[in-house]
Length: 153
Image (cartoon, rainbow, N blue to C red):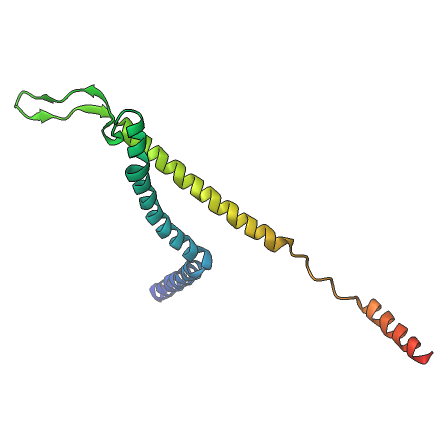
């Protein structure tokens, strides 16, 4: 008997948790956030391509034909170990870092501009003056009395 009550209690708690999760997952904010993450991922790829394929080549040409993806600071050159296997060089990839930094700055600026535009839309919607409040019962009654007195004259 105790086991049946325990199973029933666990089932009710699980169903309650499932219902709460469903209410959370179907809310507009969660769905909007998921769409934003997907679009953001695609936007990140576009910005990465913009930086690496369009912005960086002219900058590299201006500073003497440097390809930023090849710009590295070598700490240790490639060597071979005792068994004759090649050991990769130890490098600091400055060009990749510069490119990633530019990616970040472009994405951050784009998001800043989008948030600024959304905030301006919210301000315009908030600036619409609210409708005047409905007259109170006393004002309505006084208006009716005034109208009746005007009709009698």
